[in-house]
Image 1 (cartoon, protein in one colour):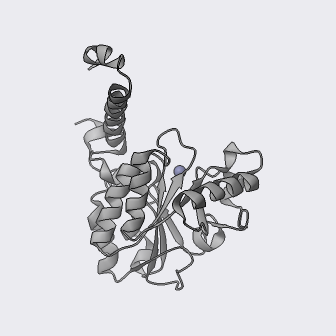
Image 2 (cartoon, rainbow, N blue to C red):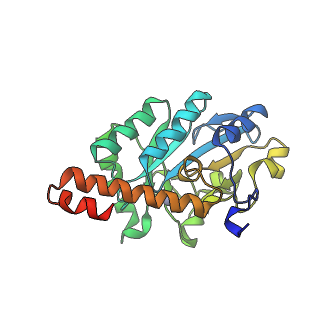
Length: 244
Ligand SMILES: [Zn+2]
C-alpha cells in the first residue's frame, strides 16, 4: 500500500452530510455572519469558492436538505470560474434560492488600493445579484490581512477578530483538517461556537486523499474545457478526436 491509499483521519475528510449531522446531533444551530450571538452552540458555516460554482451548488443542496444555512463567497476575478457566464451565474442564483447567503470572496492583493478595489467589486456584485454586500471573505490573506481587524470600505470581513479569534475557527484549507477534526476539538467537546470554513471541492470530489481528489478534479476540468472548445469552436472538432 503506498502513502496515497492510506486512509488517515487527517487526510480523509469523510462525508459532508455526516459532518453537518454531527453538529446538529450536538444541538448546534447554524447562523449567518452578524447573526451569531452566543459563545455556545452556534456554527457560522462559510464557503470560499476558489474553483467551481457547480460543486458549491452540491454542498448547498446537502445543507438545505438538513435545514442548514451557509454563506457562499464568490471570486469576481477568478481564472477558474466566471460568475458572469450564464451557467455559473445561474448556479449562484440557485444557491441563493436554496436559502443561503451569497457574497464576495475578495482578493485584496490584486489591487494597488484594496479599498477602492473592493468598492468596485461591491458595485458590480450588487448590481448583478441585487444583493447587499455586508460581509466579505478574503482570498488567500497574507499576514497583513490576517491581522487586519477593521472593516474594508466599511464592510466587515471574515478575518476580523470577532470571527477569527474570539470564536474557534476551523478550516479544511488544503483538503485536510490540518489542526485536527472539528469533532476532536476542545471547543466542540464544550459546545462552544465555531466558525467553520469549508471548500466544497474537498467534499464533492471523491478520493482517498486530497491529492487524489485534486488529480480527479483536474482531469474533470480538462474534459470540461475540451467540451467548451468543442461546442464553441467548429475547427476544434477536427482535432478533438485526436486528443481524446
Ligand atoms: Zn479563496
